[in-house]
Amino acid sequence: MKILILNGPNLNLLGVREKSVYGSESFESYFEELKEAFPAMELSYFQSNTEGVLIDKLHEVGFSYKGIVFNGGAYTHTSLALSDAIKAIEASVIEVHISNVYARDAFRHKSMLAPFCKGVITGFGLESYRLALQYFERMKPKQIGFGSKK
Image (cartoon, rainbow, N blue to C red; front, side, top):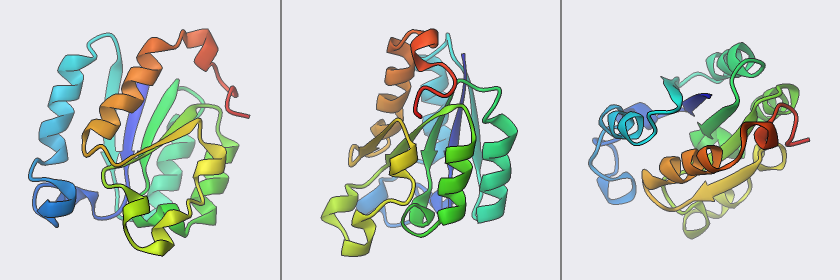
C-alpha cells in the first residue's frame, strides 16, 4: 500500500524550530522510525514550503496512492487551493498536526482542509503521523478505497 507523508511550510525545520512546540527530532529521523514500524507500507515523504508545489504533489500521487498523511502547516488555515486539490483527488487524506492547534492562536482553530479529509489528528507530537498510518494499516484496502472520503 503506497502512502505519502506530505509536509508543508516550515516543517523542514523540525528539530530546530520552536522545540517547546515541535520537539527536538528532525522529521527525516522520525521518518526512518516510521518505515521500520510499517514495513508492509510503501512510505514516501515530501516537504515543500511552496503552496503550488504541494498542490502538484497531491495531483501527482492522488490517483495512484491509497493514502496521504498531510500536515499543511499554516496553509491548513488559509488555502482554498489546497482544499480544492484534496477534494479533486481520489486518495484518502488524513490531516495531521504536531501541536494541538486548539490550544494555540484562535486563527489555527479553523481548517480549510478538514472538510475534505478522512479525519484530523492533532496534538500528539510526531506520533500524530504514526496514528494516521495506523488507521491506514488497520483498514482493509477496499474500505479505504479511492473516493471513500466523498
